Length: 320
Image 1 (cartoon, rainbow, N blue to C red):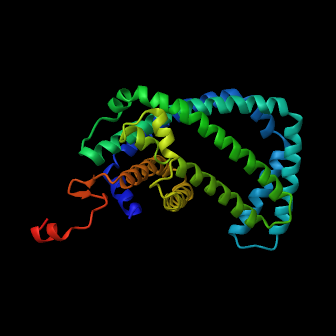
Image 2: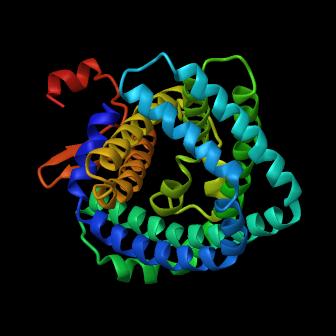
Image 3: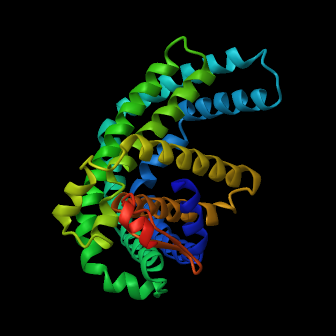
């Protein structure tokens, strides 16, 4: 039921996607230019290296043979990818200092851009809450400015925690990828395990932080109170939340992959901001349901999830 209601709320707030798109394009463009200037010297050396070219050639050959249905040479290309990957890691070890400095610069740029997009997500959450609670329709930029103080504090807490979590997962995935490519596990199973780890890590993160934004915006809790509330298990039903997030994330993966390959990346202009909006919609639907608060799905539909008390004998005969 939460899944169905989430899509109703998502459709009701579809216009926010275009505002998210414009803001994210501006942030991404600026962050991309700064990142390119920071890491260009290091990347230029890697691009011109024979190790990287061999790795790309092996991966390209494997994918081409897989798509063409020619499985006879998959083992050969898989071994080529493993050997080229080992050589590439050896090359990185010789440039470890330069690699670490470039990585730190990228993390810094990523943190700043994530902070700005977090402000847009906060404004999006506020707009969705206004539509669900009051059917109010506020301007995106005006909401972003009016909530700037709250969103700044929220992102000052959320962004560092999110980056630390992502870095921990990234390091784990890096070593897992190294283990998988250097082991006897078939390449397709390695890809499956790689995607599975990413999926599980995303779902865990979103499950435990799902009530943070709604508790701030709808619950009117302070920053510390909202942070504590999102980790309180009473009434949260984390397994139910995790299962819904799993389905949503899988759909998002599938839709974005289809947009990448079937529309040559053009569709990502809509699917990427849509992904953030629908996840925020689910967070608020889940919070409203958890709190038993009435909310609008559209102009003509109100959802009441408050637990009803069984009617007494007297109230039944009174028609209450």
